[in-house]
Length: 416
Image (cartoon, rainbow, N blue to C red):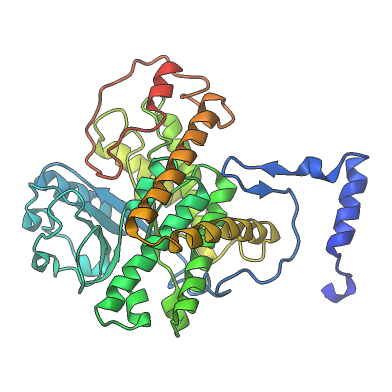
């Protein structure tokens, strides 16, 4: 029988000496690489001291799998209902309704057994004071951009907007943590205690195309959230668990050569699931080019089905735990993001806070534009190997926070 105690452990210093030998005279610093997100990465790592936050922040996952959420934003009530029922019959575990002004909820919800699925309701496209009584058929609700104080969990879509405006990962997480803290403070002001208030929020995140950064990003926001709640006096560990719902980023999806959007979406969903996202949103890969068909939704949804049924990513609760590389990368992202979060907290007014965030977003968007034009960040079909297809004037999707054109749109045309 193999006894691992027979093998001596290797110290970090011994690894360094081995690497120096293998480099054959090259400097160790030649291995350093600054990612386009401003985080320095090394191809090797070692055990780290404790990461700030609750080390069990990722262990409290309520189940080993994720919810595949179909985003429903059809213009007509009948079409939305047919879309929702089709999705649930073909791999979706829940529905994300982007509520349209002319929807008849009774028609949209016809035949849907809400007690068995996850439900996300986005009221950002209509009157936020919409009568919530009609939604009581859902026993468990996740509200986006809602004034709800009584039902389910709540978040805003400001984090997704920030990403689609060009936010780097440290800005994204600082904004996310600030949004979560603000929501909790509103509930505290409504006489809820810390544990009750923290149980009523979740995070809506946008996926990133940088595989390693995305894995570490989801880990980082969960650690930071647990650490923040600990400082706020939350007592129960289960209250420190952050439910993360990730949807595809819009800013890196282009209208030309949309098949590459599907490849990007596949990589992004895999990354965010490895990082620990609890739910993923499904959008049609061709939404930027043409009217989405049921087939395009099926193809996009099958990415989740393949990751679950053929790649078995749901067989491990935390597949990256124990990886020195991801723990170190998470710690670096936490350090940069927490510093920005503290800068937001130091602002004396909401105006000052908003101006600071706007300044960061403007700087980040400018850098992303430079990365795009210089091709330091490559997008096949956009800034390299552009498609010969002519540009379309398609403006069919109704997703609210995804409705603005990509910040790269003008550059994409230039490279066409």
